[in-house]
Image (tube, rainbow over the protein chains, first blue to last red):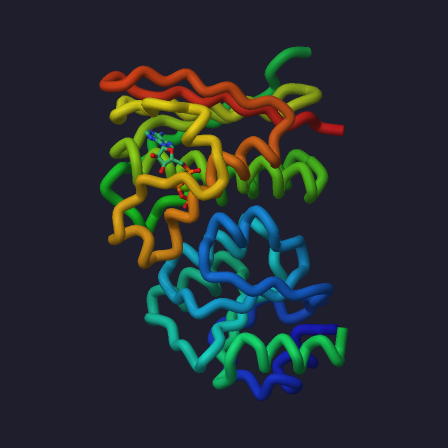
Amino acid sequence: MTISKLCSVLDAKVLSLPDDTREIKGVYIGDLLSWVMGRAKADDAWITIMSNINVVAVASLSDVSCIILAEGVELDDDVIATAKAKFINIISVDKGAYEIAALLSREL
Amino acid sequence: MSEVLNFRFLVDGEDFTSAGQASVKVKKNLRQLGISPETIRRVSIAMYEGEINMVIHARGGVADVNVAEDYVEIVLADKGPGIKDINQAMQEGFSTAPDSVRSLGFGAGMGLPNMKRYTDYMDIQSTVGEGTTITMRVNIE
Ligand SMILES: Nc1ncnc2c1ncn2[C@@H]1O[C@H](COP(=O)(O)OP(=O)(O)OP(=O)(O)O)[C@@H](O)[C@H]1O
Ligand SMILES: [Mg+2]
């Protein structure tokens, strides 16, 4: 699934979308960063409620295709600026992680 | 040919928000060298975990990355408190991270296990009260 399809399926609010041709191949859900780095796969969409600056580095190093902030979590402007500069896609969705994953499982 | 490239980074022990910059830079450099995405991913996650550990647990340190023909080596050296029991520290879930960093998503006790998982060689030298040096290598296929 493409990231633009993902945005429409989830009715997402786009916070940073510099890499809009990325394909999503799977999903990983987690808030503890070392679990994400140990278990998420490249090209996964990463669902989390963590919003501090470190999520941008974790997403970049793990090669996930995007960060999906669940529960409508918002980001500080400096985090959004860093994400854009580091080419990291981030969207916010006003739904819980389970509901987001359930919607995505129909498309993947 | 032995080592083709070396990078050195000072990892600031105070600055939590910029932690990871060295790893992100290394990732970019390795990509320019044409190293495969999966190898780069392993190197950069292992390095980030080590870098973050130096920030959280050791008040910073120095990261050296040496790119040889058939492997990438990462050496992380700090003058922090050292690790009392390395076997215990290597176990999944063991963490002494303070609550302040747990609220940022760290402290799962998965960093050292990830470093082991993603590298082909890992050695920890640590002396309590003196510091810790971790050497990791990832083979380039
Ligand atoms: N450079 C270091 N200096 C001193 N102690 C360290 C160092 N690196 C790790 N440790 C010790 O080893 C423990 C386990 O480290 P590990 O990276 O696995 O987990 P963590 O950093 O606590 O949490 P996580 O990495 O999941 O965010 C740490 O909590 C700390 O006590
Ligand atoms: Mg750690």
